[in-house]
Image 1 (cartoon, rainbow, N blue to C red):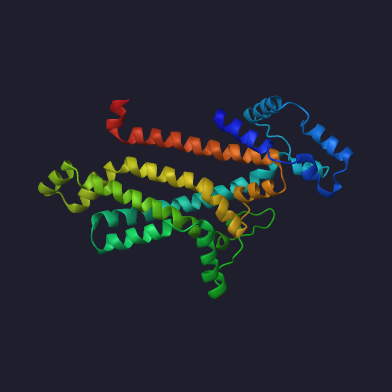
Image 2: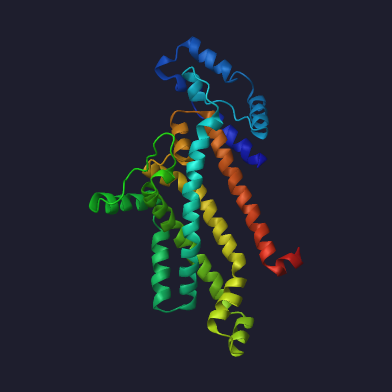
Length: 305
């Protein structure tokens, strides 16, 4: 995580151009540029600025928005990103709640009919869906559900003071876009893990002993495929970190991805570095929690530890 913060901060700070002059735009007089550079401590050495920024991140002081300072306002970065972060959590949480049962059903169905028509249909559909980028899927959904059918809004706008849950219709197309890609990957991975488990000797022995097929699937196959299933869910959550940025941009959804894109466009290095660090920390934490969950769920892994 320390290496990630160094890379993020350096990448943001060494972008070409004078940050103060770009942020001020047409009002960038030499006096105003010098004043903004002083307020942003841009005249200090880069290592010193990084250490000050890192100390603020560790203590919960994320600094003030550079773009707001250029307009004579003081807007803490956390106040600027708290709302979008909550909106993204709502979008990601709903997607995850739909992802788990869909992947479980499709992956199990494909594994139980491996090599047959149902497996071919599910696998080919998943492969085709996984090859499509998010912006193309989102555009196609807008054409179908708005342009042709006029059923759903093409823009996921949220009124000030409200949450996306105030009008759940705006969440349908972004959720479908994320599900199309994530479910395709999740179904294929889950199918592979269940097929592997179904080929184990203990599954064959259970069937030879007359155990009902439903019990074999639930008690032996799915239970022992729990470890890979947790990794599938973790990979899907990690995908959301990147995929949600593109999806929010397509639908103009007021989430953390849209906030990051806007911060890049207005050249707000403070907000960009904070958002990128939060996303990176989230990615790392998900990895750690997934590894711990797999170790707790699979007894043989605990004995190896």
